[in-house]
Amino acid sequence: MYSPAPDMARPLIAYLRVAPRERSGDRPGLDVQRDAIDRAAREKGWEIVRAEEDVRSGRTLRRPGLRAALAACRAGEAEGIVVARLDRLTYSLVDLAELVREAVEGGFTFVSLRPEVDLSADGGRAVGEVLAEAATWQPRAIATAGRALAGRPGRPSSTPAPVAARIRELRAEGMTLQAICDTLNEERIPTPRGGAEWRPTSLRSVLR
Image (cartoon, one colour):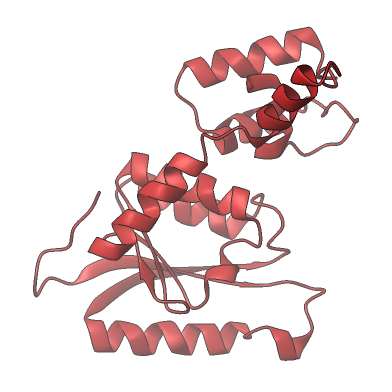
C-alpha cells in the first residue's frame, strides 16, 4: 500500500457527493465539503489534483464522478481519493469493503476527514486490511450451512446457469466483485430478479 514520503506533497483527488433525497440539514453541501478538503490540504500539504462530484445516492457505486476518480487512481494520476465524510463514499458497508479491497489491491488510498481515516497510515492500514478481507466473506453461506444442518435445504440461486458460469469465470480472472458487477451492467445482463443493476451482494449466492 502507498506510504507517502515525508515533506512530499500527496496528489489526491477530492470526491464530493450529495444525494437528491438527503435532507439539507443531514448532509454537508458540495461547497462545505470542498472547503473542508481544501482546508485540510493546506494544513497537511496535500495537492488536490482535481475534484469529482456526484449528485446521486450513496446506495449505489454506479456514479460517474466516483468511477472517474477510481479510474484516475488506477492509472496512477493520483495517490488516492479524499472525502470530507466517509458516508460521501457509500452508505453500504459491503460496498465500502469492496472499495477498500480495490484500493488495497490497486495500491492507492482513501482518506476521510470525518471520521479521520487514512488507509496509508498505520491505523488506516489495519482498518483497510480488515475491510479488504471482509469483502471476500460470504455471510449467506453461514445461514445456508445452518439450514442444511437442520435438514432444511437453502434456497438455490436463481441466477441462470450461463450467467453464473460467466460470474465464476470473471472471478477466477481475479476481478473484484464490483468490477464483475460493472462488466455485467455494461453487457446489459439482467439480474435474477430482472433488474438492470448488479451489486456485489447479488453475486454472493453464486460464488458461495
